[in-house]
Image (cartoon, rainbow, N blue to C red; front, side, top):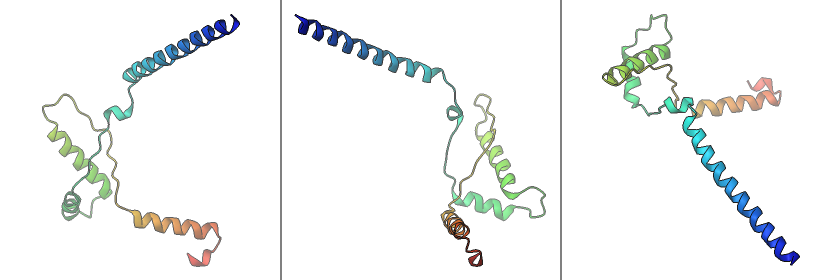
Length: 122
């Protein structure tokens, strides 16, 4: 008789835990739908290298603005022009990633030299 009660208690416990886990998953999904993050308004694309090359060719070098800032400004304008007719669109910021693995490798070598205090190799 005690074994039957133990099995019954175990079955009720397992059913309760499964129910709580199921409800927790539903609550997580509902929370995710309500939560607004920056990723909801972020996009990523790969630019054709010709675009930046053309920009550099037309860049006025006497400008007081850093070239990358001018490129960001021009890209923002182009994107907004393409979004004409779509509901209000604001571009807050643009980040560029460059193929700079060689530069990162050099920075890592420099860090190793500094950690080893081999300043003459710099």
